Length: 373
Image 1 (cartoon, rainbow, N blue to C red):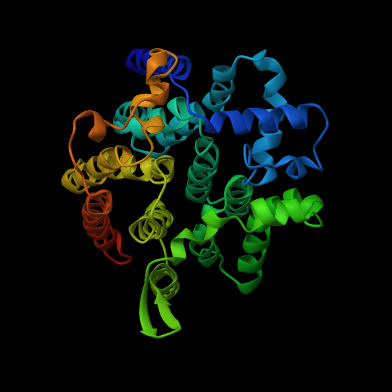
Image 2: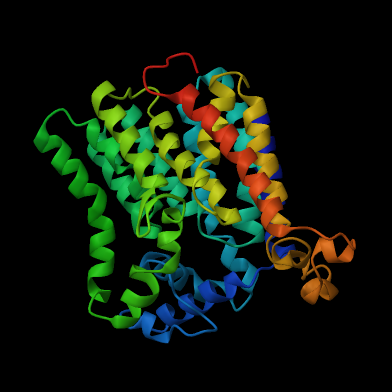
């Protein structure tokens, strides 16, 4: 227990330091959205989208910031601290999901994982919230509380749409058609209830409901004619859904059935750096449960992720430390500073290839029916 408290205190201290010493411009959008909600501009929030601040996420995240915005006192970095609620709760769930002998190790891996620290407290992104709800869904499945698991997944969808890819494996757990139907309804209900007031608004439908980011997973394809192609991510996703349906899924290793669709998404999608947090809790479970057996694949995944950071805007690397080094605000990227001529497209392709190979390896290991991962 003493080690747990040490990990917790050091982990929180690191989070507060990173939150105060880093900055990314995306936080300005959440701040503005929170200000508008706090002032009562709730149902017409999306009418205030502009080229400067585009509200392209579901409304719940702006409601969330609207709740905490008045408490920040205008200090921007303080808007990152409410994420601690979900961050620490997620760590506690992971602690409860594993063998007690491995619980402290699991909690420690979560508290010091670079993906969560970077995405949540350096970039100030809210992806920790839907990630928390997906892991909570796993925990509730393990407790045989399927309807609550569906609701938890539903709240994840209400914050960010990606957990909808996990809906089918959860529905398959229902014993009867009616059970499956109820699980599906419960999982989409939070999202539907949160967006219904906004559906009549053109601004919401344009910027959030049909945002361009939603189609990123459809780019990877194999042409079969001049105007027809096989969309790779949906094709493989449907394939695995069929495998899940035919072979069934086990509640004790159900986290693997959530991980497979997410790994497929990353293989076939040019993903944003903060998105990798979606799979990080599951990769930690793999490390702990299977005694670091798949460490090499994970090293390649996290290594390619770190490498990819240097092929985005400098504000995601050197420029993110503007509060500590104001001169870095308009600094050039590391390749320009080093006078190295890099083919960005080739470099990104190589990193994505490495990621895809490692992710495919894990998918094969996690394939339903393969009990020895």
